[in-house]
Image 1 (cartoon, rainbow over the protein chains, first blue to last red):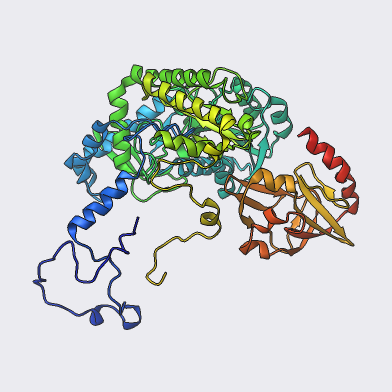
Image 2 (tube, chains in turn brown, yellow):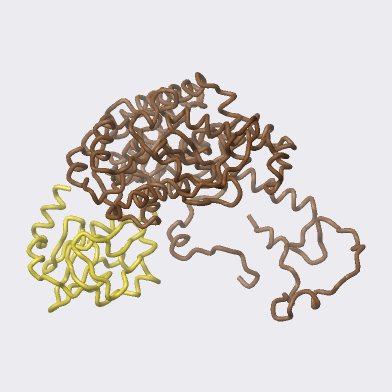
Length: 482
Length: 126
């Protein structure tokens, strides 16, 4: 498919602007000569129907939750209810200016205020800041709070953060961003944090432990209360990576498990668009003893009026311009109200049920490294197929021929040839059965007709891409002289 | 899986080649096969002092990015800058594609590493 720039032809245009009715000042008077562009602007010249067809064709080549099943593990690609979009487009919200006087946008402030309360209730925290604009951004804010807490107590010797070997890559990256050294704690045979290994790593130099629960193997950390005690007894804090929060809503709260700091991904658990740039939203919440360190400003309420509180002397400061991705927060707010407390619990229960159903159907056809009841996702290994020369990557390519987005592959790193499947609660029994049938067919093909899988995909818009050259020598933008 | 005589090997699948006071370090054939096509190598800066187990650099493949932990302590005296433009050299010839050269602070640390025979046995168990 050609790029829109390659379709450009001199003389074509999609729109015609009316003549300018204010006096022409002349660019040379406004912009210094050395800064002014002296060539024509590099926009494609194309007619309106060609323009519409170009972008419609592009959209048809995309795969999203609106077009099909998307079992990308640890990403919670659930369906995004359209009522969220309707509400976020209401003029009172979409037309609000971020610099409007507080008295003119009381409705927007109320949403932020209530969202803080609802997320705190769901997770067992005291307060949330809605500023962080993605999961990793929430992690960064959370770790800055962790550092501010220790520094405020003049406890300057804590330079290390403990992170399990099954963790999301963002965890060590965020810790490093805040200046911490990362200590990796290994997993035990059941796929949980190895308690003895943790005891060896813990010391007065440890600022905290970052944990996802259920972890990236989709397994619940059964010894979480013991882990919490070990970390807290040593003076450290417990950080909850909320990437897998879809498994626990209404069932157990991070606050009750001993976590001090939490981030949630509204674009995962709370049904706002994920992928394609989202944008995301990664609110960070804390227990009472850390609330003073949250990003400023916070929305507070006095005599039935909402206002921004800027007087937060211990705050880590702003994490984002203005107040976070407001439209996304609004969509998540709509979702929480739509579902209600019981509904959210049902979301988690169904997501766990769906994952266990698929795991049971697939476990005779792929190696299942941890044979336990899983939570909202599970990890298979393609090691049996690898012996026949068919890799997990090959099978992931093949699944696209059946109209599915492939599962997450080669993650978590502690499982060889990993295939990580998260069906979410929004898929029907029929959809799960169809996906299982396709996976089983591929598992058999890998043994009986390995070449068929190795050369896949066949039914997609583009065949197998040269990922290696793309990674080694990426071409990041179109240029005229290419 | 190629294992070469005369080199030292670590459990993290790194090889060490000693040349006088200098020790060259790279990743083994097993490591490059497990990682898949390598697309980027982050090298240390010369002059960096490292203790055993500290991250020397990062090797990134289409599958994952992995820290390279040094099995020896010492000071980085040389880096293989050709890997910046051609990271695939590690896939093509892992035992010629050294990542960094060390001035060892304690040659006795070599005793903690495996020889080719022991490493072959180690790979069998993996």
